[in-house]
Image 1 (tube, rainbow, N blue to C red):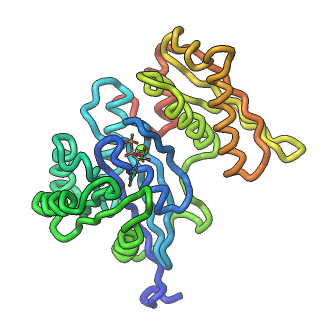
Image 2 (image 1 turned 60 degrees about the vertical axis):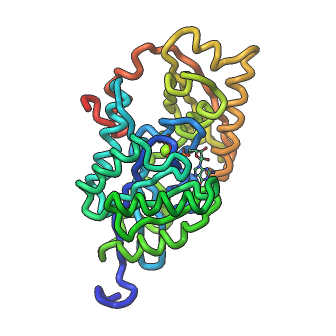
Image 3 (image 1 turned 45 degrees about the vertical axis):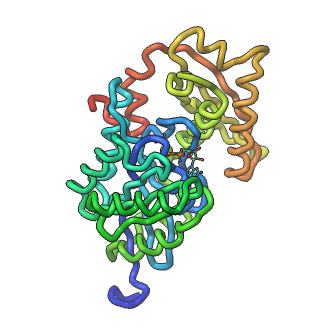
Length: 303
Ligand SMILES: Nc1nc2c(ncn2[C@@H]2O[C@H](COP(=O)(O)OP(=O)(O)OP(=O)(O)O)[C@@H](O)[C@H]2O)c(=O)[nH]1
Ligand SMILES: [Mg+2]
């Protein structure tokens, strides 16, 4: 294949950035075509940078899903926001995602300004257009263009897929010529053990209330291949306070059983094999101050 032929390979990094809960991970999953990043109705679901690989003909679009950007207070929060901005800095294109309902409210407006000021190629997409009326949408698009996104404002629904193929085409055409970063059949850069922990953490975010999801972390302690083709996965759910342990376990252990059975179902579907999942709950007040935890997620401990 000649470098200047019509099929010359293209590849680049697109950071998806925005306020918490605007649908960044949903969009990355939609573009990749399979779930590589967990999604929940709660804010601060994504904790680290996760790469998802989307293909479009000769172009490989490496999407960088990032944690939502907010005003961080604690160490983990600072590391999350730092990971998001680092993701933007390392990319060819920064795609700012805006929630159609919330619009360019305070937090999104501040993120937009920084993206415009720093990104080599800023792009905006208004997401969740399935939730708003057309007039409101057009007003918001005009506002985004005025902010500096000029003629590059997309309107999409990551949930229904509306508008997403237009965006994919635009991104593909904007990718610089160059070799692919990932093999064609690889969908994400997450190691299997980390991905498996994320699958369980997603259920924690779906099934538990209040501050509990944010007070917990999941680690894969063991991944054991079995002779019959099944895999045995052992994980620990860490919580910060003793009282939270009882909530994760639930009456008669029902809650953790539900978390485990939902996570196992997803692990089995994706891995296409039987999974024996064993979940433990441990209290560790200081898991958010454990250097190893940050290293594993690729987060900066001293952000
Ligand atoms: N109606 C509608 N809901 C959406 C759309 N995209 C995402 N959502 C929902 O919005 C919620 C948040 O989605 P996520 O993809 O987790 O959002 P995020 O921006 O990655 O969130 P953080 O990782 O916490 O920053 C979930 O309940 C999604 O199902 C959309 O286009 N339309
Ligand atoms: Mg996310």
